[in-house]
Length: 223
Image (cartoon, one colour):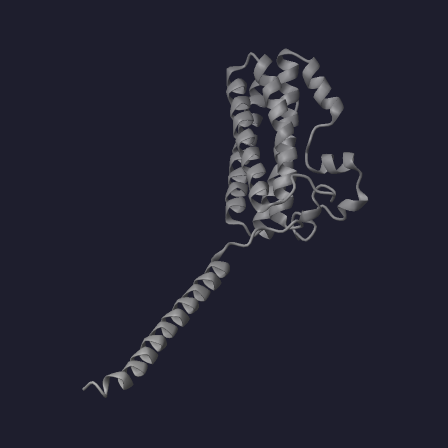
């Protein structure tokens, strides 16, 4: 027995080495598979030129003006229904604007782009605004339904029913510019959160247009 024992020890050592080697290879394989799975499963963020990013940027610009107009009329209107509606517009769009800001931060993209407004919509068959590079900044703002500086100044100057009626006129047009933008990103975008918010904009602002037209009629505003 004593003569055989030394001869058995090398065999045992080799078995142990082989088992350890197999274990190391198995762990390495598992780590590699886990890493590959993680890389595959990680969501791809929208790119700099994506419709999702373009929408998030342009709609922030759009919402900023809506909040400004809504708060202006909220402060001075004497119409309870219009005050409630303007408050809802201001708070709702301020919240959405913050959400869009957060998307761009999460995606690692700048808040502003060197591209003209609505460039991201050009590949949309139904909602394209054509060659946006050929339009001036004022024309692009008009295409988006936004108010001019002169119209904003007039809204700030007026009071009473004239102010209410001008606000309704401007905000209806503003909403009518936002809806095609939301429909375009539903068509062209890839991020499901963006599409969900865009769907909310389409339905919510369509309903607000109807409500504002009813107020226009009640106040006797000229459409």
